[in-house]
Amino acid sequence: MQQDTSRAVLITGSTSGIGLAVAHGFGRAGYHVMLHGLADQETVQALQDEFSAYAGKVGFSNADISSEEGCAQLVSDTREAIGNPSVLVNNAGIQFTAPTHEFPADKWQQILAVNLSASFYLMRDLLPAMRSANWGRIINIASVHGLVASEQKSAYCAAKHGLVGLTKVAALENADCNITANAICPGWVETPLIQPQIEAISREQGIDLDSARAQLVGAKQPMAKASPPNAIAELAMYLCGDFAGTITGASLPVDGGWTAQ
Image (cartoon, rainbow, N blue to C red; front, side):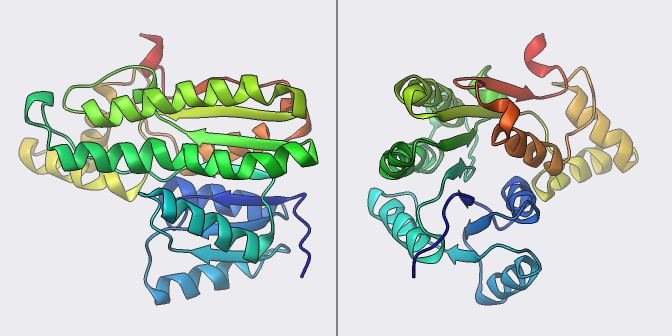
């Protein structure tokens, strides 16, 4: 069945955290939404029930985007569920930390595959339809680590710096087709992933959780508070709006001043 793809979005890594917040933002705005991630059937059903409250269609894929074949599967699943998406949000990412001289080769390859190569494959496969339609939006969720470095994050920083560069190339190549490509570069974001670090600081130093959170975030950010996931979602939505048509090739920090130092 022919789908209306003028307002259709694919968001990788959208079963939790930033990706899920972005997906809800587009869902509320009436987009057809393609969810993606690793989730059991119960979680998938719960997500589909949540999104059924929105006007647009919803699809889900658990394709493994650490390979070119997995990315092709996600593209196929997306087209079947919602048609060719006019918006691509590359959000999926993984992390592993170790000194460069001790960094495992398999972890290096895995992080580059998910955090960088998957974005390239999906952009490569979805851009032709955007160009034919003379409209598209590519939003790559990079990181402050696409702009600055931190110790023990060689693979993550390499991948995110690469994603920022890839974004710029896509912006230049597609400027004549009313397609923009931008990178959002979050600092600390209030997701479940940072909670164990906060609790560890609280235990080790005998301080309350709010003080531990401020200490963790303030070690890097002059503004010692994490951004809510909805802040990233709202910025992604803005980049798809009428007033953002000439914002392209940008790397937009949401980082409490981290990269201003």
